[in-house]
Figure: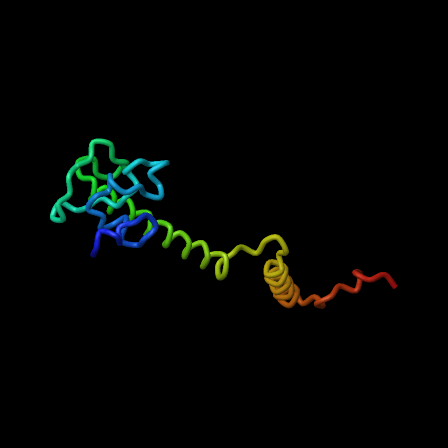
Length: 127
């Protein structure tokens, strides 16, 4: 890559920029240099004094970044999938109660047949 390709806004800027302090980044006004993906140790990473800690690994910036992003991705993916499936397939019979009324009607029919009563009571409708 040429030096001219390292410019803010390009895809390679945040990951491959060998001179991050020389070129201004898109989020430098907010995070300074802390928003960029940290490099692994085998990629020549150095611990920065003020890196954004994600609360996972306190001694390795790259492992902390990786663990946080893996956990967040899995958590949101699993939760979104579970909530979507619950809403579509296992949602409760609320607020209409249609399934409850149908189940109750079947129970009432079975009770009346077992007792030898007519399905609809003649006293229900006045003559």
